[in-house]
Image (tube, rainbow, N blue to C red; front, top):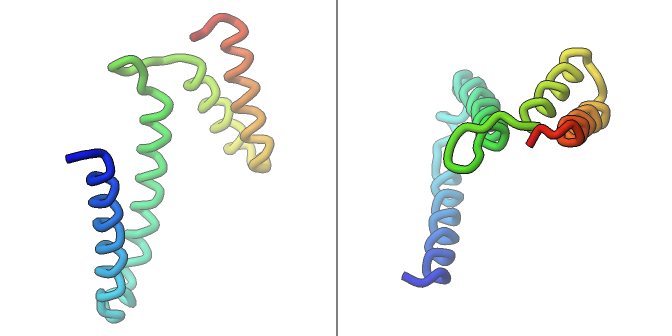
Length: 103
């Protein structure tokens, strides 16, 4: 199958998923467990994305400046810093580590 075939198939799958979501009965969505599960899934997905982007590299696990940037951002979050300060702290930590020669 060509690339455009896969793109069209992905579009159809995304559209079908959206349509199926409209067919879910409202009584199922009003159950108190649904918001808790969806909130937990959101946090788990974000954590998985951060872990994959932080530790993946060249066919395996790598520890480089991204780990230092994540650590600096986590410390800034623990200190209740504003979001822009968290981003700047992470970027500054990555830049500093790379300046020191950490890959």
